[in-house]
Image 1 (tube, rainbow, N blue to C red):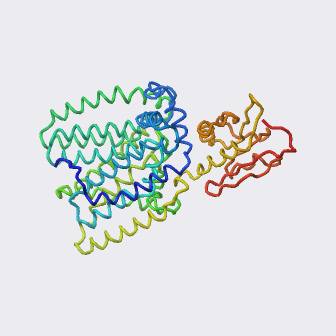
Image 2 (cartoon, one colour):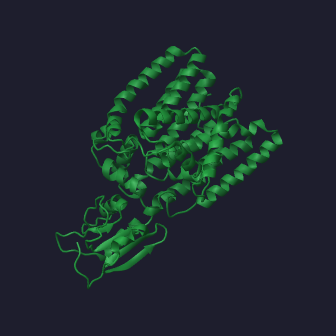
Length: 466
């Protein structure tokens, strides 16, 4: 059961996705969260990152450190800052390949396409965030847990434990599957009479977790910033359900559909005796265990429930957990179902394909264009800076592109919303915030349809703004 990285034509399935990600990483503007990660953490001292001196859920510690290293080695362009998650995709694709070895060809094909080309998951291998590091950590921890369950080789326990440790360090939301993983490992150790080796590994990683996780987590808990989340479990179900199928809005029926799929996932445990389907059983346990822990976390700590991006790991786990459905059907019907699902997965990926924006972050697709115009057309007297009137959550992208484009004539932006009374030389606003320029002497410079944003400049004959 050793992992051998020899040439395998199955891995070519991931090649178009890899090229697609590279092109998008070079073309797409950085989003608010990416800019905040870079400005607030990748540029901060390493110790401040490790102990969360400025606690915020945006500090995905391991990823912040990797982004810092990438910026040092390759520069601060959007592509350079995204290199860690692009490499994370390679690790993710290799883990998918390893998990699915031995499956019937058509089901293996469907699952590889569905997992590698799932639009929402794929976006997080472009976005420079911790999710693109945590997801491959999750899948590799599953690879080694399956091998440990089959052969009880302690080296797989240590390797899986290390993968799970990196997973949670990359994003503390993944502490939920991290705990479930170790509970499953305990169960397999008990079954194989490997309790002492398990105790050694568990104590070792527990000590490492205390040293590494606790200094970063305590400030987050105190600031109630452990992670971005929802107010109810229903929002978890509906938001994740909405992201299985591209172009459809969140709706109760999709939440219900996802709830049904989750309800069916325990059936995967009946496949445990089928060696090549054991990943499905582990996927089901990770889903249900993580949700139970999330509920307990909410009750005990008043922590939020998982939602869309923080619960993104439920999507690949759900696909893996439900892989065994085809096993229960007669061979011919199982193949027909697999081909149907394969077609649906390809269509889903094709509908989402674009080179302009990330699905959940269209608002930030055009900041660089707006800032380039400002750099070319806005001049100030020596020692003065023009302050941009902007929507609240445009501050981090404006500050990033001010730095990246060396726009010394632009003032630093804070979280404050565009002042309805004050006059500014330039305004950059989401369409929902146009009230800020109502009645003011401004000309429309540009409308950006992808992000639904507007760039305005003060009329020359109007009074001088900031």
